[in-house]
Image (cartoon, rainbow, N blue to C red; front, side, top):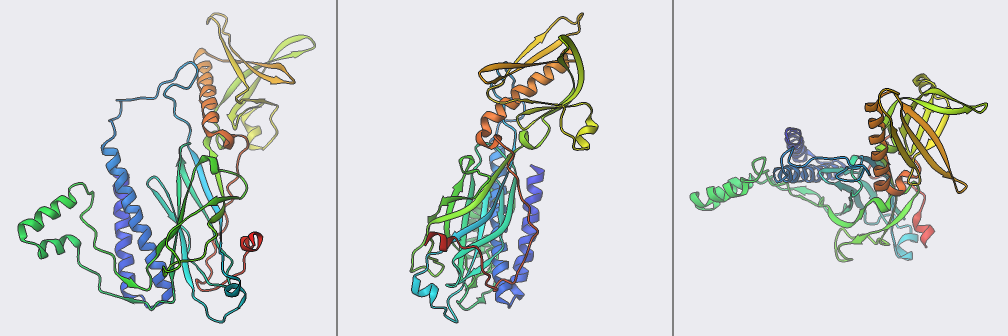
Length: 414
C-alpha cells in the first residue's frame, strides 16, 4: 500500500512539472507531447487510486491461503508472466483522391496509444500522420511484468488535429477551492469533504486548457491470452467518433501487432537441485548423479551446474507436459530410497525415467514443483508450447513532424 501511495505522489509531482511546462511552452511539438504526458499522469493516478480502494476491500492476510492438494489444482495460483505488445500497425482508409493527390499541405493528426492493465498504464510516442501516410506505426515495445492468465490489455488510440490554432488559457484554481468560494461556506465545506473522503490525495487542480491540443479517443480494443502469438496478428478495433469529429481518421477498423506472453515457468528455473538418475548399463542397474532443472516443460539434467553456465547441452532431457505421468515411491527411511518415475508416451508406449531424491523432504519439494508446473502449463495454454521471445529495440525518437515511409498494411489490404 505504501508503494502504491509513493507511485501516486510521484505522478502528482510529475503532473505539477508538466503543468508548469505547459504554461511556458510555445512550440506545437512540445505542447502536443506535454498534453499527452499529462493525460498519462492522470490515467496512472486514477489507476493507482482504484488499486488502493480495491485493497481496502480485500480480506486481510491469513483469511484465505493457498493450499496444495494431491492433484496440484486446489487453491493453486498460476505463475506470473511478462506480456509484451509491439510493432503496432493501424491501416488508414483514405479515399483514393486524398491519398494519391500528393497535396503539398493536408491536415495533420497527432496520434498515440495508451495501454492499460490493472494499475499499470503505458504509452507510446506521439506520431504525426497526414493523407500521405497509409499506416499509423508505433515501434515501441511495451512490457507488463506481472500478468496473470486472465489478463486484459486495453489498447486505446488517441488522436488530435494539429492544424487548429494552439493557445493556452489560465490554469483554473483547485476545484475544491472553487466549490468553497462559489457556494455558501458551510455547503462548500461539506461538498469538499465528501469529494475527498475516499481519496488518497486532496483533489487535483483541473488541467490547463490547451485549445488545439486536445486528444480524443479514436479507437480501442482489448487483448487477452487468446490473442497471444509469436507472430503478427490482426485484431478488431472499436471506432469512436465520426467524420464530423475534428480528431477523426479513416480507420479500416483493424490493428496489427505482436502480443507476446512469456510465463515465468517457460523463462525461469522453477526448481533445481541434484537428483540420482537410474540407468541400465550392460544389463545392470546403476545410478548417476545429475543436476536437474525444471523449466519450460522440460527436466534438463546436467552433470554439474557449471555446464549450464558454459551453455553446454544437457546430458538428459525429459519432457514434462500434459501427457506426462509422475509417480512417487516414498520408501521407508532405513532404505533411503525416495524415488519417483517420470513416464512419457512415445510411439504409443510409456517410456519411464526413474529418479531418486536425497531425502523425503527433497522428494516432496520436487513433487510439489511438478504439480505446480503442470498447473502453470494448463493455465497458460498455448503460451507454454514454445518460449515466445520479447525483442527489445533501441529507442528512436525522430522529430514529431517528420513523415516517414513504413511497410504498408494499407497497400496489403487494398
